[in-house]
Length: 520
Image 1: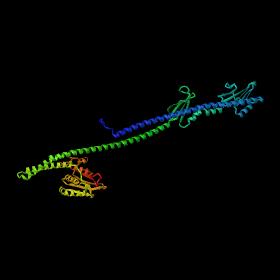
Image 2: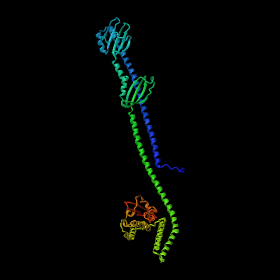
Image 3: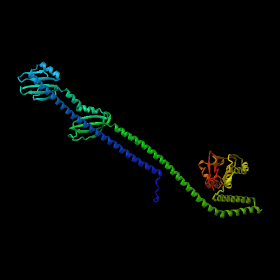
Image 4: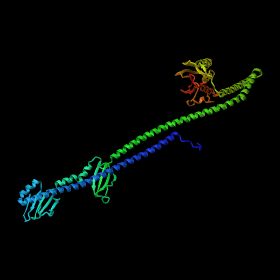
């Protein structure tokens, strides 16, 4: 970036996005819980208002029913009283006749005051004579302590009075069925209604319109929502079971946790995938950077190698020829001087070998492919180094299971095979074993594997042995296997080194068994 800050990794950005999404889901869930509570409280208010209206209508209906019943009683008792007065004027009643007439008409009793001080009633003493609550005015009256309705009919012409009485049991039955207590008990028995209570208002006077205030309470071990509504001077408390709200919120919590777990799992999986892809991309970039650095190093090495060939190799050749001529033409050299000259020739030869290896490494590897038998090339190399192996006490075993021509450069691949056998032999100066095998995998690749017990190499150093200038020999240049790797890679193959067990090194080469479209 222009300001020097590193860009946010994709996996971290993915986690940020999923965290933001989780926050949005959480806010949405809390909003749903709030809406569920709000809807439930509105539901409670509506039910409380409806129950209050039912109670109000029941109370009014009870009053109207009582009035209707009293009007019917007044009409019935009035007609009965006038009829008794009419019959009594025709032929006076006896107490026994009044008692029989009362039983036949369903009356509690009849009393006739004839105006001359004579009084007759039936049955006897059904109404106390000196009861202060006894009505003295004409019309219907109610003696609640005696549970009686009395109707007094005065005959203004004769100064007589007829009083008929009837039990208020039927009216009380109507009041019980239509009364407030029975309505409250019936409403409390409806499912999801906890209780209904009616009391005097505690919030001031009566209200013109029901207005509920809802509170959450515990009632008999369960949670209820109580709504208070003031109607007709009374405060009605209606409690609805809050289990529905708890179950709804429980379902919301379950869905929230399930969705959150799925969201977290998806975010984690995507973050891991993105992290691995980004790590692989960075590794690929590092590999390309390494290859570019290696190419730049090889280019610089090529230029240096040309200078070395001109500035170092020619003087080394002059020194070598001079020392050889000195050994051949000088007769006066002592044995010590001849030994010294031999040492100098060896040093010049080693220096020349290092320069030759440097030139081979710096030289671009451009194979000229043609059909060749890799198995025959291997057999020739083994035959060439057979005397050296016998002299060093090295036993060579082989398993060649591939004898088909492959596209390759015989000269370059010959350098690779020779380098592998030479390293395996030089690593076992005191004798040992070398196992060589060649086989094919699915007719697409041919593998050449050389195993020996010569190198003392740690498993973590198995890859470094292919790097330039890494060697385990005191007088090695560390370029042989590096040059072999470049030749193999130029053929579209790969070379690997591993340590299957201590003091054992296995070098494998895999080459394409058929020519590819992009091969030169």
